[in-house]
Image (cartoon, rainbow, N blue to C red; front, side, top):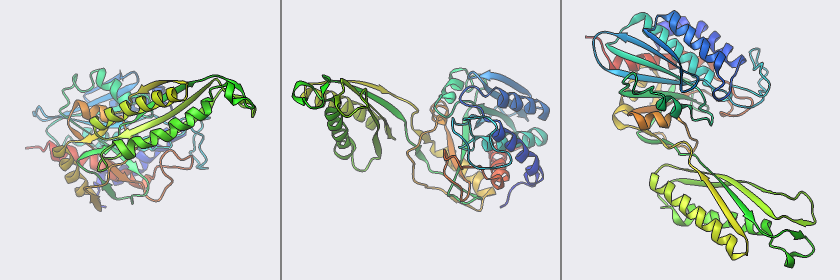
Length: 386
C-alpha cells in the first residue's frame, strides 16, 4: 500500500493506543476515560485548541496552518457496545458486558495518529477540526455534537468520516455518492383485547391472533406500497404477551421492530401505512392498537463533490477504491453531521474478520496506517500549501 512513511513508523505506537482503548471499552456517553486520553494526547501533539465536553463527552481538537480560511472536519467515534467479548485476545475487554465490537477503538486511534502527523508537519493551508464523538451506538452523539456547536463554533465547511468494513480486503476502500447507509426508525405497537381462558376463546379477544395478523399485514408495506425500485426494510423483531402459560389468552400484546430506508418520502409513507394497518387490523378483530413510532438516525448521504475528494485521497493511499459500492441498511449517526455540512463517509477494508457487532469481532491493526494516511492525504489535498 502506498501509505505515508510516517504512519509506518508510528504503526506500533498507534496500535498500542488501539489495544488500550479495546481493553477499556466505554458505552454511549460514558466515554470519560477514552475522551480524557484523547484530549491529553491532542494537547501533547501541540494542537492549537482542545475542547472537552462537546456533545456531553465529545472532544474537539483544532490544528491550524497557513492563512487560508478553509476549515475541514474529520470525525471518529469512541464508544463501544454492551456485549461480552469472546475473542480471547491478550488485550480483550476487561470491562464486563462491554466490548469494542464495531472498531471504534481503531477509528479513534487512527484519527489520533493523523492528528499527531498533521500537528507535526503542518503541511496544509487552513484549519483541521478533529471531532471525537461519543455515543454513535444508539445514543445520537453526532447530533449532540452538532447541537453543541461542533460545526458552527469552528466554522466547519465540510466533514469526513470512515468506518472499517469486514469482508473488504485490508488496503481497499469503498464509497458512493448519495445514500450510503439507511435511516433507522423504531416502532412499538401495543395491542389490547380481552383476556380469557384459552379453552373459551369466544369469550375473549385474542391479542396473539390479532398481533399475528398485524405482522402479516405489515409485510405488504414494502412489497405493495413502496416503489419497487426503491429500497426499504420493515422488520417486526419482537412479539411479546403478558402470558407465559398455555391456557391464558393475554389481555395485551406488544410488537416491536425497525424500519430502514433512504428517501424521506419513503420514510413518511412507511410510517403512515404502518400506523394505519396496525390500528385498522386490530379494529377489524375487535381490539385496539396504539402505535408509537420513533424516528432515529437519518440516512447517511454523501455529497457528490466531497465524495470525489474522498475518492481522490483514498486512491492515493489504497490498492483499490470501489467508487460505486451498493448502499447498506445499517445506520450511522455521522448522518447528522452530513445534514449540517456537505461531506462524505467511506468504508475501509478490515479483511476476513467476523462482522461488526459480533462477539468475536476485532479491528485489524494492519489497516491502521491506511486509515491514518487517508485522513492526512485528504487534508493535504483539500488544503494544499502554496
